Structure formats: structure tokens, C-alpha cells
Image (cartoon, rainbow over the protein chains, first blue to last red):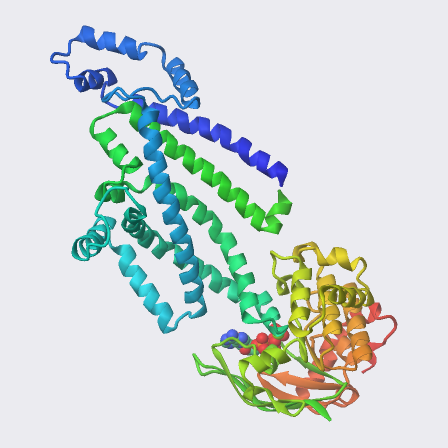
Length: 310
Length: 273
Ligand SMILES: Nc1ncnc2c1ncn2[C@@H]1O[C@H](COP(=O)(O)OP(=O)(O)OP(=O)(O)O)[C@@H](O)[C@H]1O
Ligand SMILES: [Mg+2]
């Protein structure tokens, strides 16, 4: 197991390098000239070729490509992502707090998704084909197929405007979490509970369930075994839900004015703030690789057969 | 006296209304062994599961199943669960799939015994260890800490037998306990099943394709074909003067097939039948 952990971590290193390289290239091949963007952002009235060349030199754009990449990579490793072209502030001072805010939203949502999916998945599997199962599936299908902005609008209208229970936007108290978390959770739980349901159904037909029943074990104990085995498959998917939601909060954050990555990234894209976009893409890519590793390790830890082969 | 009396057992698929077992009746006398033989798909496993009321929910059954005079089909689910394991024990074909793959086998054994008896953990372990040793499993404690995939099919089969030894039921239902095993392991498992019967005096339903083994272990034989009982009677009678043509066909064919077994069983001339 220890060796597997090490191996898995070592594999992610070249992956991380590759991802950082791709991120860097993406920005370099953009049709816009960063020097011009900077000058425009600074409100320079007339952009002359000399001025562009001078700014390029200031930004270090005249150096060879590979040197620039290595410079950038080294500073990224120290969490120095450069300065925003638009505001001139350091990228990390903008990205860091936004990342933390989105992470809070994500973790609360993932916890809610996990609880809801497992509970609904298990209940529906046990009631498969019966009314409860059909009702839950129908409702979840309806809710999950609503676009998030529409769902958000409906919830805001009802809970914030009509009933005046919850704030419409911002991030002031735990109450501010309810609506954004609800929108995120409804969308994803509708998908994930189906996975739990089918995993539990598959396990319920396993021979070990019949043998346990034949041994007179109480149904509740057997269910614990079934749930444990079903979650093995779904753990990987739940782990990957964290980066997916981290990168997928754009709509929710913009609707609820959540000061997170989604809001920040849209602003950065609108204003062509290259260093900020670059850092945003890099952080998300790293999150994907990280959680992919965690999910692999968790899966191995849960499955004795896998654990042994490693 | 009969431990189990099955009268007019019918099993059908509620979805397609197809009849899978058509009105079979038989009984198992206290302390005796009834073998059920028949070709694949003849309803042997369905019959076994019907006795324990463990068939899939899509299957329906009717008739009467009396266990020690009590109609099992009239019991509540809770009462039935208390019978399972404690009084009627199942031994299934594929040990590899009979245990939760992500738990060590000891978990299932301890949970089962703790469900039926108020023994402390130490007493359970002592009894289990003794039972496992008696079915020729060396290092029981080590085995209990192994995952199913780390053990052989024969070992898992003997673990199920050891569990039955501890539970001391009145009836053991063994559904093809040797089919998935090689000849040597099958021989060991049959030996242990016979020892189990001797030690506990329990009755047994033994389902098998292997007439060589059936001849060795069974007192009575039930022959099934396409969901119906075609012949039943004392084992020696079935083997020597079968009345039904299908039984004669089975005996002549299957006995020839089980030659390899007769060699391992050591000089029992199964072909003489
Ligand atoms: N859950 C089910 N739903 C519908 N039909 C079933 C179901 N289980 C079994 N059957 C059918 O019932 C018939 C008898 O099956 P059963 O498992 O009892 O056979 P068997 O005698 O045990 O055969 P084998 O020797 O292969 O184990 C088969 O034709 C099978 O297709
Ligand atoms: Mg069968």
C-alpha cells in the first residue's frame, strides 16, 4: 500500500508538469498580444509600436519561449502567479480568497450531495420499482434537468423574495449558503443518487447477500455490507465531484454574487486578464489531478483485492 | 418423524407466469440425507431456496412446507429469519461469492453466530476455532483474518461447514457444495459433510450432479426433471432398480462420468450400481 501511494504520487508529477505546460501554451497562442492588453488596461491613449516593445521587455516577453515557461513555472511553485494586468495587484491576493470562498461552497455542497445521494440511492434501491422509487426518480429527473440559472431564479424568487427568509446574494452568514448550496446540490445529487442506486441494486443480487440472509443475519446488518461494497465504486466519482464543482460554480456564483472563483474567472476573461486566467486554469487543473490521485488511493484502500495487486 | 415435509410446492415466475416447479412433494426424515439430482435447470436450486423462502421477489411459491410440524410459509419474516441459520443452514455452491469480498471471512462468521447466540466474543471464537479445526482447517485464526479471494474454494466450503457445526441446525441444505471444486477438494468436503452429519445428527438435503457422491452420502434420492419430481425412493433402490427411464439414463450416464471421483474416494466401486 505504501509503495502504491508513492507510485501514484510519482505518476502525478509528470502529469502536473504537462498540465502546467499546456496552460502556459494556451495563453501564449492566444491571438491577443498581452502587451497591448496591458497598455489598454492602463488607459494609455495611443499605443505606439515602441511602447508595445518596451512593455514586452518589461513583461519579459522578449525572452525565448522555454525560458519564459521555466521562469513562470518556478514562480508558480512559490505561489507567485504574477500581477493582474488590470488591477496591478498580485494574482494570488485575488485568487487565494476567491479560491477559499469557492472551496467552502464546494465542500458544503459535496457533503450535502454525498448524504442526499447515498440516502436516496439506498432507499430507491431497496424500493426499486415501487412508488417511492418512481417518485424520487421522476422528481429528481425534473429538478436535475432544469438549468441551474432557472432553478436559482425560482429559489431566489420563492425563498428570498416571497418568503423573505434568505438573503438573495453575498456571503454573510450561514444563511447565505443555503440557496447556492441547494442549487448546486440539486443538480448533482440527481445524477449521483442514480449511480448509488444502481450500485446497491447490483450488490443486492450478489450471492453473498443471499448467503447472509440464509444465515439469518438481520437485514440492517446485510445492508451495511451492501452499502460498503456499493460505495467502493462510487467513491471515485464522489472524489471527482469536488474538482468538477470547484470549476462548475460559475453560474451559481454569478447569480448569487458569491465572491469566489466563478465570479473572478468571468471578470478575468471579460477583461482579458491573462495572468489571472492562467492561474485560474492552473489551479483547477491541479485540483483535478490531486483529487484523481486521492480517488485512486481511496479506492485501493477500500478494495482488498486491488490493494493486494498493487 | 420427518423434519421437513414439502407438499405440492409450486414455484412460478410472476412476471411471465411461467411455471418453474410444478407441485413437488417430498419429505426429509430426521437425521437422514435426501439427495436431489437432476439435469441443469430442473429446479433443484429453486426448491432449496423455496424452503428457506429466499427466492427472488419476482418468483412466487405456493404449497406447504412443514419444518418440524410448523408451516414455514405462514411464518412472519422475523420468525423465518430466526429459523435461518439457527435451524436450517444453507451451504452454497460457490464459496468465493458467498462471502462479502471486502470483509475478512471472520466478520461473517462472528456476525452470524452473534445473531443467534448470546455468547461472548471469547466463547464464539473458541467454538469457531474448534469447529474449523475439526473440518481440517489449520490455523483458524489466520484464516478468519483472510479475505475470501485469499482462500481456496475448498477452504471456503469447509468454512461454511464449520459455521454449520457451530450453529448445529436441524437441517442442512447443501446446494451443489462440490461442483465448483477439484476432485481432491470435493472429496475432502464430502468427508466433512458426512462427519458433520455424524456429529450433529442433523438431516440434510444434498443437491448434486455427481451420482458417485450421492450414492455415498444419501439415504434417499429425489430425481427431478423440468420442474417435476419424476422418481423418489431409498438410495439403493434408485441405483439398482430405477423405475423411471430418466433415472436409469441418469444412473448409467452420470456414474460413468464420476469415475475420477471414485478413484479419489478410494476403492469405492461406484460403477457397480
Ligand atoms: N429468478 C428467476 N427468475 C426466473 N426464472 C428463474 C429464476 N431462477 C431460476 N429460474 C429458472 O428456473 C429453472 C430452474 O432453475 P434452478 O436454478 O432451480 O436449476 P437447477 O436445477 O438448480 O440447475 P443447476 O444444476 O444448473 O444448478 C431454470 O430454468 C431457470 O431458468
Ligand atoms: Mg442449482
